[in-house]
Length: 233
Image 1 (cartoon, rainbow, N blue to C red):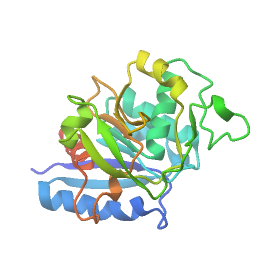
Image 2 (cartoon, helix red, strand yellow; image 1 turned 180 degrees about the vertical axis):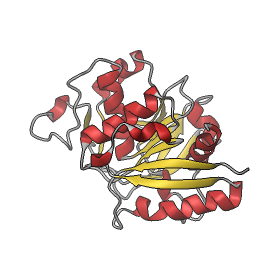
Image 3 (cartoon, helix red, strand yellow; image 1 turned 120 degrees about the vertical axis):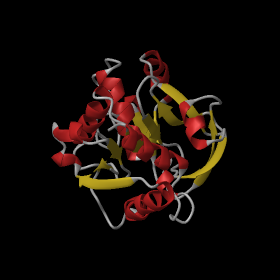
Image 4 (tube, helix red, strand yellow; image 1 turned 180 degrees about the horizontal axis):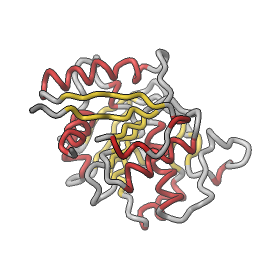
């Protein structure tokens, strides 16, 4: 009997977000190439509740600012605590760090400057990038031996971005002390990948693997996430 993995795609679906447009084709390519059957359910952040435990994987998608920061954070916490494979890309990366800072590291006041522009300022956990990466490609150095390196099959990769916000370096030590690992950086040493050892699949990328190539072949990160979701049943 062939198992069909149920994936929660968390975010406000939009035809104007290229990553969203590409996802159906990427799921189909995984079915054809790897034989993985995936049912994807789009869940707006404002509709996130306590039912994510029924899913085999959670994908927190680009497209921020989200309708509900609280919903995005709840989705991450549910996947982390229930050990559900989770992938966060772009805005998903940012909110995975936000959830971890608040609920694991005890940084209750951690804020996202895009969501709280008048209050967070330079003290925010997620702040405006010095130079927006929206629409750009950039090199990512991946830590040898890391989970990300094993998935990607490389320690250096060129990736595409669509974001203008990223992690504030002043919080990196606190997040590391809490158990999070930063295993991808740009040439200036800025964090681009985060992972959580001991979790079945917990990976956050500031870049958008959905935008790799022409959209007909899944990025290794996406293929690995879907495989982990299929194996979690």
